Image (cartoon, helix red, strand yellow):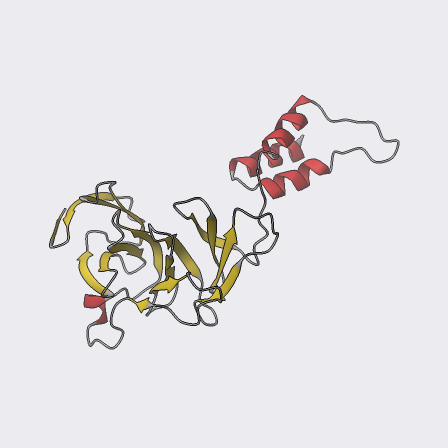
Length: 239
């Protein structure tokens, strides 16, 4: 009974592999009596709803699907990116490459609206927002753009100075929005790689930030238990 309860808790956490492992302990072996009941069947049913399973090379910290539904990108611990072709049944990613050095994790990743690029946010203290081109067959060796200016005397004024936790494109793909452990969210010009405006209203980590569908508002959510809605245009932002 305790194992069944633990399996249910794992399902509630979306840890379906762990739940299946627990439930499999009840499968009869050889001539053992079958002690499984309706609850076992219900929980196993809930664990078996996936259309496809992807075996990533490490712990997955971020994930996104391209707008056309053809590709899946995963952000992994250790600075790795995996891109999967959803139109094929291969058990290996179509593209794998590193975006960070030792000890750097990829916390967030997102496709551009046209699906040709991905923006990445990492745990690095600088150079932690980058744009990568996926149009080539080979894995990209370096980013198209690194956002901010790590050589600035006052880095906090122009870029994130702690890990980036979330990342999103504006609906038109011209701006990028990030949230960070430095207590700020920031809007960036994708073409120039420059900060357009910092959003400073939280007193703890900014876990998530998102544009409204029409791009005229931004909402940020922080570890401080506060969500803030900002009125936004490319030249001005108001809380």
